Image (cartoon, rainbow, N blue to C red; front, side):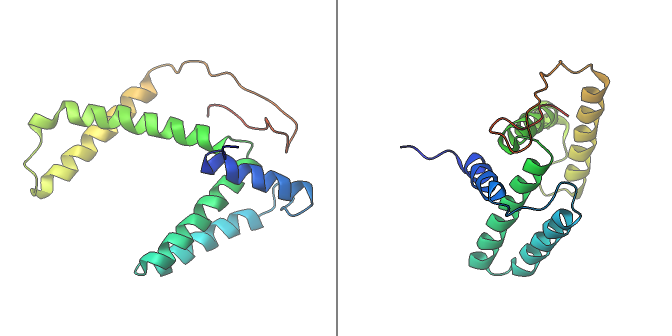
Length: 147
């Protein structure tokens, strides 16, 4: 049997643990504190690749847990973020010929300006309606689509 991809596998394991009572209550501020703790551990480990890899995995697992508490499908949210990045970066690339040459410190500033321009354009356009799903907390389909 094929394993689910890692984000969905993490959510599945976390839901199983929650069914056994190994979970924070809804809205518990310790959830956010745990996220901050995992970020701190990754920062401290960044010079040791092996340790940083382990800490990054812990942080990703925690982010999936946070998504579960927020009733957001982490894999779906990541897919949308990738699409958003691709659109915005596409706008930057469309202006590549106008950018200062690589190595010029102004290049990154100009790229950031173009990125912000793409964001403003996206926000100015009406968004396509996204189906919103509701499900019992902890159920297999508990997530929220869109933002």
